[in-house]
Image 1 (cartoon, chains in turn cyan, brown):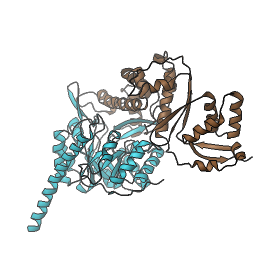
Image 2 (cartoon, each protein chain N blue to C red):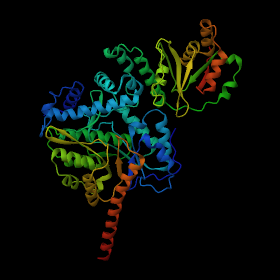
Image 3 (cartoon, helix red, strand yellow):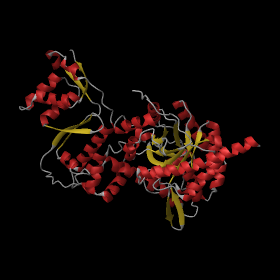
Image 4 (cartoon, rainbow over the protein chains, first blue to last red):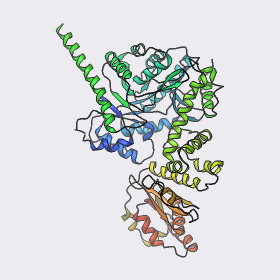
Length: 301
Length: 259
């Protein structure tokens, strides 16, 4: 049965959204759509809404009537050398047709090989072969769904000896070849740059503003391995001060973009999630004001 | 330079065998060791898949304790890693796995508790029910009833066990804190799980009622099923079980089988 929307805006705007968790279904539904809230859209993990039926669908259908959503897949494994799992692709298509999301995204990573799904977002080596493989898989997904997708830059804890391209260059090449958009995860940029000694500002500066269509913000953990400190992208805490600063920098270069607060572990109260969203909205307002002034001055000049 | 497919296969095997020596040459050590870096991915894999199993088998986790469940999950994941990204019902081999897992051989009922949890999960995430109008059935003539073939809600799950698994499951829900005493020799149980709206309903059945329902579920006609069960169970009450089936809204449709 196709899902019919009765009301509600359908487009995710350049404002703060939050990852939707079952723990918060009732909090979300208790708010009237007209009430002023700091969360204006929700993102779901596509796989959680690919079961045949049951309460997850019941709640998402209700929430979808009042909010635009983004569907963010974690399992398609765009970096798999063996190509895409067709059954999974069919499942994603069914979910996308049912919920009509404003944005559909996946990751620049792999998690499936030799018939096994590892449930982690593992980086790929940045080589000409990998580029060909991931571009073929993105083309396959976009053609199959009949729409543009966004792909997310990974957080990583290792680099391959065979990599011979820098990550942002590889991503830019991929965006150019496939026409997909970038989901710029600012926390992932921070985590990977810290872990590999890259320059986060330089990393972000390499992207063109029009390719960035969504931003992710999340918390990370710090672990020690011997003397080496490694940041782990666990989505289990508040967004760090460093990542907020990097977000400010990102907005100054890219302009305002839909910004998601991701919190997948140690799930907080809905209120805490709203507070994080409010912080993102403060930065977005600031950049909106700056932009308006720039335009005013431009008109006077 | 190794092809990507080869790197991915070695990476995956290194996780599942917990031995990174084959993949280490592909990874930069960069201030620590290649093995240590690969271990981060190994840990993430076991932790997140372990979380999926905890979510899908909460009562097993509670019965054996969190620490032992982690150990058990690790062994399960290595033997039966997921074959696709839909983890909502990951763990379908858990009953078989538990029945052969040496450390829990003194707890023979665990496999059936796992079977119950998996059935519950399949019912919870299974297809939603349609709205079947009972009036359609009531309009049938008496002679049609004999050759009536009933189809049930497609989320329905039938289960029987030699152990009181339903009591075990119920007394290990969050709100009961496992306080009830259960006599494992109290005998087995037969029941059916189904979901009309958002809640999974569980209905205890007599042995005769269970086999009657199972016969219908497998596509046998009402007349054939009733006759077979009546031969074996003298106290079988056809009217009563049909009332139960209809009252609980377990029917999704029907057809009349003509020879």
